Image (cartoon, rainbow, N blue to C red):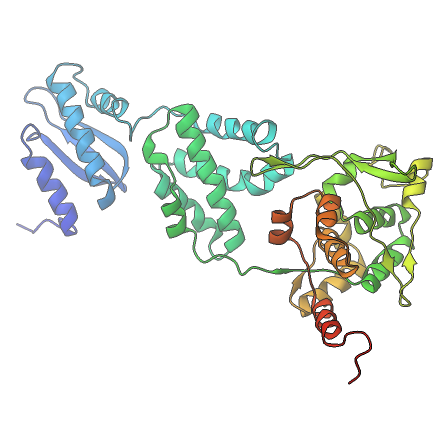
Length: 412
């Protein structure tokens, strides 16, 4: 008689432990299409078999054994004579294997929380940073390829192998999804994705890129070139440059009169981040300088007060609702921007729409504006400024040390 292939040692031990456990003499387990299949042969009647929502893996042995014991108890007590019903009863009594969660509802609930309550993220943020990863996770759950948080994260991440930024975003999205499922929809605790899971599975983080800043000459080259083709978008870039705005803040500008009766601009945007909220603020211009050091004073403030500042229009002829996405999309099509992008790459820097804000920070420091005033004008605190924004460049660092080495009146 040919010898039966019992598989690896853990498989043989799993089968043996079920057969030899008191009360489970009529039970067997097997690998059925990669899932754990349970078979029960009662003393009277036909044998019954059910596939558990667990992969045939060593890590699922304990959970499967627990379910089988609970199902056997349900049958013995007469709660049911159906193996399928007994397994369902066992799952319903388990905090780690409870079924019945509608994951599509979980995802929709999370989207509502993030967009309308907790973070108030934009629809594009959801579609870029959450939706692709959550859709893949739902596919894996519905196909039975993921039955707990660890395998869900592990299997979802395979789609973004070698893409460190995407893998990091995937970890954030799926941890939010699993936490929401457990806290709001009664999902089993086994769906939790822990910090240890993320550390183990995410992989090597992407190398942090140095954010680009542009010189005054480079900004003039960019804006003047675009102004020759599209004066409306040139005005957008002048505003971003002059005030160091977040691109989304373009939607929240209004003319106002300052305390000294001069004309100014007010930003009503309030950003919620990390439990704190930035306040509305008076904008302060930091002017570019020409090659002789003279200030280049654009008239965007006066034009806005007079209602003459022309900004981009949408297809409906109404002013376009501007944000980082639209600014970035426009810039990617501009010859001057792509030339500057290559220059920045050559010096190891990452140029993006947010670079106008980083450049504003650096220009303010270069012009020796007091740090607290810079933070107030940019709408963030000192800690955020120190953590996230550019203070220096190679040129400003060299000049600062040269100045310190050559005090007034000192001769080499």
